Image (cartoon, rainbow, N blue to C red; front, side, top):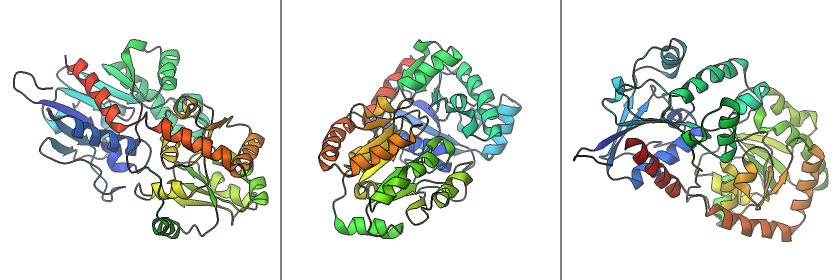
Length: 386
């Protein structure tokens, strides 16, 4: 990416990598690491709001001679007030210094100066489709700030065709302004067969020795866990499996946490909290079935992580999820509770079908790597810089 002997300076907003354990935080961490590994001709200027005292994961950012971290002296709330409420044109270069391109991977684009190209990642428009599953203040914020950021960006990255189509149909974004960039699956996600390692993961999260069904994702209404728990009630009556839901608390989660008690499943359904990335492969590998009943997803990375670990998958057929899963998972309406009960019972008692799904999943997941994502993104950077 060098021109006239000068190293290009690529700005990236890594705030989410330092503040969010899963979701967009993980997306940003994986993408930045892959970019730095793939590009030896640019200098990466990693901007962030003032980092929290306790980071969600250890070593979230890459390091090296071609990487600099520029934390703002202001926290997220102050930057939000200045940039998105007051819309003060204080460019990000006041913190990073000169940039040739700036990429924001988390919905919103701060002011930049000098007319440099800007890239914005929009993961999904769930706040448009399902505003009732978000806090009203968050919906108001996203409805004001995301369209404004989309209009200002030189180019948009969408996680999936589903997100691209939403941007075109809902906000009339020209399709030629949007590039689809699929996420990848880290090489750490592979079957864990070591009995001691699996026992250690079970012990760490208090899972006991019973077989289990696993769900992974932040505890918030869009993940549809209440329906899942209700659908699991007949499964618990027929089979020895427990249901474990892994994910940090998001918002509006009290009803979800109370649903297990309402169904009389306090001993069979557990929310086990945020799981460290290093423990996830063992957690997936030990599960007999992975379930993902989400109402709406921009991509749905846990589907592929489960497949990579050799776990059969039962997923919602909403938004981008059929696009990601292909023919390698059983797909059901997220609104059909009876179908989810039947789907879980069928898969948990049919080893041959499980084996077919696992084999298809291994083949599917090879199509999604962070190395491929980084190379595609670097090509887009080159186009924008040209």
